Length: 506
Image (cartoon, rainbow, N blue to C red; front, top):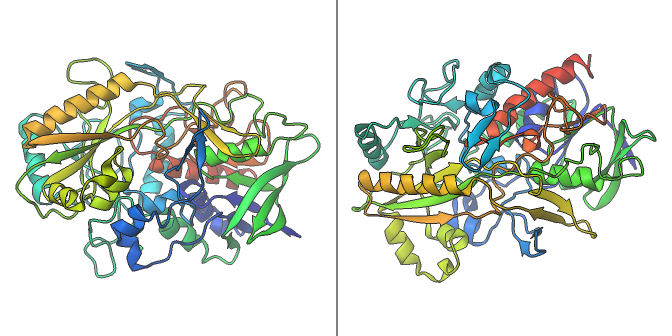
């Protein structure tokens, strides 16, 4: 069976969803192919036991590490992708992130575009994803237009901590949050199951709610769920994709189009290109540089639990960031990273995601801790290393090889943050490193650039090797910076969509 469209977009996350939304008004017949399905709106959306204990929405697929050992990635196959489970923190990269930047662990490479190139697309992306924030309070914020919406105000204990941080001479700032109509009858209720949960009210600014579902209101846009793309097929010379081989509801379908967009996430996009090897592209599609799958990055992340008796009733605590150490530590002339407050934790999360032995701790112990604690995230840049890479085993399974980079700077950030939290009232600060197989914020496996020898994609995210192939997820990132990547994915998808309108669709 063969189907034909004008554009095929593989993946419905932030990259693919944003691009589909932007092209929906062109009249082009667009197919979005998603290997998962819609997340149902149900009470279990907000159940810590269902989401974390039963892993109700997580993929059951196992990947392999560099030693061939299986592990369960933090990945969700669904309409909207991992954005359904994000905490909706939508940061711009700092201006300095686009230039070469010396870190303790090595050099963060320059991007082939500047902050000013993406700035107007950041503005558009913030409007599309309904970002709430405040100008002027963040010492690292680049020049920008005002946020589309006012910030989410700090509550209870978080407001007290912010006051104490300012008294110490620091500059706590509001997190830029993508939330829909907070405080309105049909909007966000600022609950304690936002971060890492799907929103039962569809009031979180994820790719499904803000991009895919609105795009589907256009007759020319079609979505296939439960559809897996096994490989892309090119013409004889290998410079054009002719078709995608899709398994839809268990049945094989060949889908032809003049234009293909890959947006499966940095790991799975690399895997698809590698699976699409042929006699012309022996090392994988679009891989003449040999860089497809290489330079995998995911932030160095440590969760910190600050015990601050007595009990507190702050419900929505994910509102504040500390960026004072983003470009320089308190005693060193190199970047350390960022600190963010996190959503309220629950015993089910601690048992599922904690270090070995966590599951044996009685639930009441966690409940007592979380009733008195505030959770934080310390996040540092992961530097690109060619040997940190995605490969395929002989039977086609994803294998992720990774060694930590810039680890010493991250340890220093954790030390500085623990000391800081004690100064603002914490009795004890527990730390939980997420380890080298953190698969959130994944990026870098198909880097963009001007030189085909040192990059996979051009600066519009089009393959150097294949004329009608784009990759619009975080695969294109040359560096990971130290902020959440989603808004940059959306901004570049908007930029790529404008380029497609002016070239392929004109």
